Length: 179
Image 1: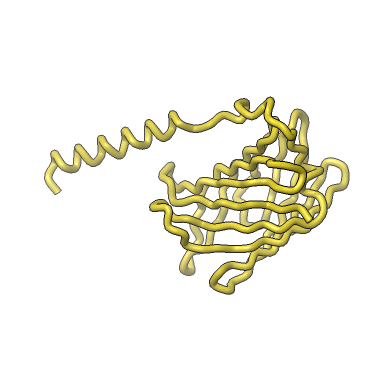
Image 2: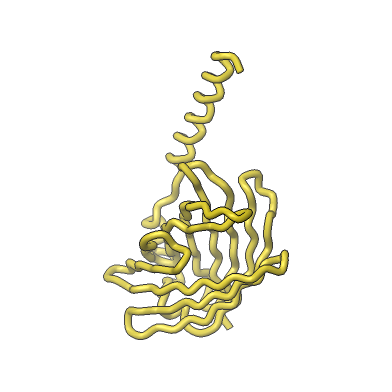
């Protein structure tokens, strides 16, 4: 590849990343939105979720269903998730959440690197964490910027962007339905 082409590609990629960084949404935008999301109330009991994983081109790579059994004792919550993927594989993830002041939350799970950090405002919840993701026999640490929006007392929508080295890998889109 000649130097001009390499320079143009590098410049174009840098500009796209810079513009993408400017376009990120702010949680405060949702502060007045209703219904107000109380994570402890919504994630309490049994929920079903249906989702897709799309790669960076928007192509659906996997479809899945999740059954969640959620319980809270005071400010400590357990979200026990059972995934069934379109290819027949199964996965379990157990989140252990702690509610903090002013709508803040922290969370841990076996495949989460470090501590997840999140916060609610209005009808929205933003959640950021690093996931140890198995792909073709290898483990990749990918960053999730996860947004949830309460639609009504039974339905919540979720969109998460996955990144590695700041570059988008794909998205996870879910709809939760509280039984």
